[in-house]
Amino acid sequence: MDSVRTCVACRRRASRADLLRVVLHEGRFIVDERAALPGRGAWVHPTAECLSKAVSRGAFSRALRVSGKPDTSPLENRLKTLMDN
Image 1 (spheres, rainbow, N blue to C red):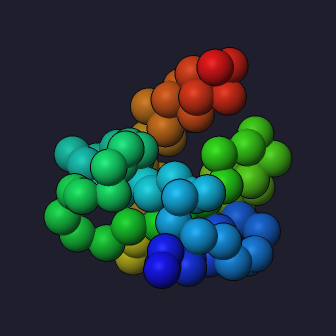
Image 2 (image 1 turned 120 degrees about the vertical axis):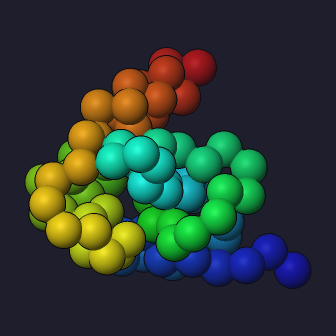
Image 3 (image 1 turned 60 degrees about the vertical axis):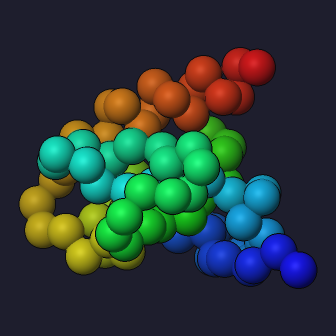
């Protein structure tokens, strides 16, 4: 059975396969494609709506217990690439 996670943006529950895991790496949020990187992860639907909601609300920083404003541009660029395909 696939594990269920909660999207940090919309708070809807979904299977891991339907969400993307985001981690903090060297001060930047990145997509953990294989959900295998160490450390805390935040889960988000791969949609523009959930991404913008999570970024504007600071949901990634809160979920990953990070202070300040880490760089979200690598995450936004990666999600745009995923959504275009």
